Length: 220
Image (cartoon, rainbow, N blue to C red):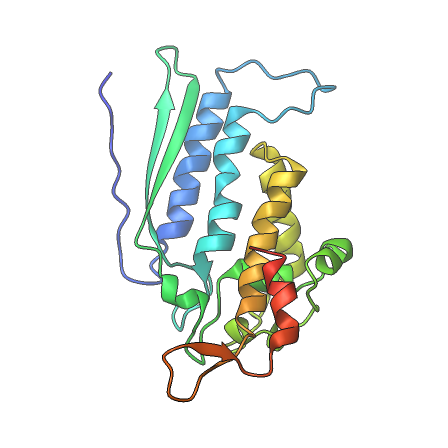
């Protein structure tokens, strides 16, 4: 059989992300019909589950609220889903393109930062919030507070739990998850640093923010 391609395109808010998720879920479900199901006692995630669960992670780190779309993908992706000769799902890989990096540090007033920043400040996991030295209020972080900090009808705490569960299904260890969260939190802490130029010099120094340096250094 020959490889098949599907191009999902359209203007902002047309439904590209949602339709892509439906296509992936469909292929995963069809492939699962030809795969023997594991015993109920086994908790190991299937390959089909892992393919589907890439979506919550990609959306958390690559989607954000815009003026036209509350869950807008701020990057492009090329997804390959591989099938064996017997019709079973054999694997998948995803290439990302053109992530809107500027949104990490700034947003328009009617828009929002990437979902993951707001999820981490939702206090979904109080112990994690404490470990990351965060306060459960996104407005306290400059990189998150230039636009909206919430979306009507969206529970960021629940979304955080779904993101964390998706990492588990994808096979991330607790250490690997913590590393991802620490780096993300470090960006938030760094955004609260302020600098000033030294008189008659090209160097810059902390502008009364020296106490934040140890916190930021913990995460990088």
